[in-house]
Length: 567
Image (cartoon, rainbow, N blue to C red):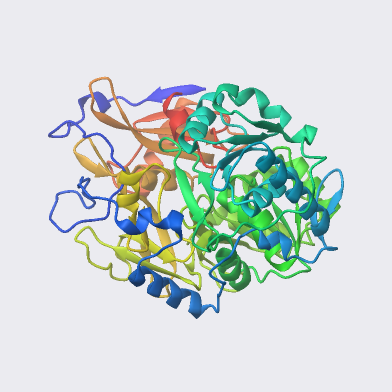
C-alpha cells in the first residue's frame, strides 16, 4: 500500500464553517440554500399506516395506488396468503436446486421445509417469533425460509460472514427466538442471545414430520426481515410482507427476465441479500424453474465450474464479479453459451466493462437498479434496449419520480432525488420509527439516490443525496470524482470519499486498485489527479490517494466504504 498526499491541500481555503455531522437523507423540502441538496432535519411522527403493517391493514389511499400498479401488470393474490406457497405450489418432481452434492426436487425441498418449520414450533417458537438465519447458500437456507413462513414465523436473513459483534446487534434488534446456522459460522452466534440454536449441518429436524399446515396469514402481514449490509452505517432491519416476493416475481422476473419453467438461474450474489433472494429463490420458485446454489465464495474459477456443470440460462452478478470473471486466466476458453441473459446491479456498471464482456462472450450485461427496501430491481435496461451506464427505465408495476430540492418534479435532464412506489415497497424499518418517517411516505420510498432521467426515460445514477460535501470552499460530489477515476485505463477500481482531517476540515481521499500490471507510484498518483481535473473541474480531484491491491467489499459485494476509512 502506498499513501500519497499532495502539497497545497493544507493551505487550501477552509469552508466558512465547520462541516456538520452527516445525517440520513430526508425528503427534499421547499426552501432555498447555497447547497444544491440541503442537509436538513425535521421532526415527524410515524403515521398509523406504518404501525399497521403487522396487522395486515393498509390505508385506503395507499391501497388504491398499489392496486392500480398491481392491476397494470395483472397481479392478484387472495387476501389470506402465505408466501411459502411459492414452494408448496411448485411442481413436485421438477428440480428446484442444483448443488455440488445433489439435485433437490421441489417435493424434497418442501418436505425439508416442513420438518424445519415443525422443529421450530416444537422448540417453543410461536406465530410472529423471529428466527435468525445465519446460513451459507445450502438447501437448508430456502427450506428454513419457507418452513418458517409457513409456520407463521418471521425469518431474519443475515450475512453469515459478518462479525460476531455485528450479528449480535442484529439478533438483539430482531429479538430472535431461534437461530438456524451453518456449522462454519456457529462461533459467531452468541448463545446468550439465542436460546434455541439449530445447526443446519446436523439436521436436528430430521425426525420431525414433513407435513406442516399453512399458518393463516394476511398477504400484507410481515413475512421476513432483511438486514442491510451497513456499508454506510449500522445495519437496519427492513420489513417485507407475504405479497412482496410474488410481486417482484410477477413484475421484474416476468417482464424483464422472461423467466419460465425451463430456465436455470445462477446467482453469484448470496441468498441473504435481497438481490440473491429473488435470483435464486423466489424467481425460479414462482415458475417451477431450477436454481444453482454455490455455498463457497464467488471465486471466478468456482463460478465458471458451476456454469460448465449446471448450464444455467440466467446469470446474476455485480460489476465486481463480472470484472473478476473477465480478468480470470481461463476467461478466453470458458464456454458460457448456455447463459441467455447476464444481469448486473448493486453498483454502476462501467461502459468499458460492459463492452469488453459483450465482445468476449457475445451477449450484453443487462444493468438494473434496485434496493432492499423494494426487494429487487425496479429500474432496468433490457437485452434489446439499453443505454450503457444507465440504470434503465421503470419496470412495469412500479412508479418513480425525481424530486428537486424545492420539492418539485425534476425536468428531463435535471437531477432529483429518486422516490419509488410499488406493492413490494417496505412500509417500515424494524425498530426504526425515525428512519421509517424519513423514508416511507404514503406508499413512496424516498431512496436518497440522485438521478437524472433523459428524454427516452432512461435513468442515470449521480450519487447519494447525503454525499454532498464542502471541500476547500467548493461543493463537491465524491462519487463524481470516483466515476472519473474509474474511466482511467490504469485503474481497475476506485473509491472516493470526503474525509475529515485532524483540524476538522474535509479533504477528498481516493482509494485506488491499479489495473493489472500497473505499479503504484507517485507519478501514477499525479496522473490520476491531473486526469480528474482535466475531465471535471480544477477543484474536483483527490487530494490524497491510497493504492491497494483490491478494495474491501461487503457481503452484498458493495465497496465497504467504512472499512476504507480505517485504512
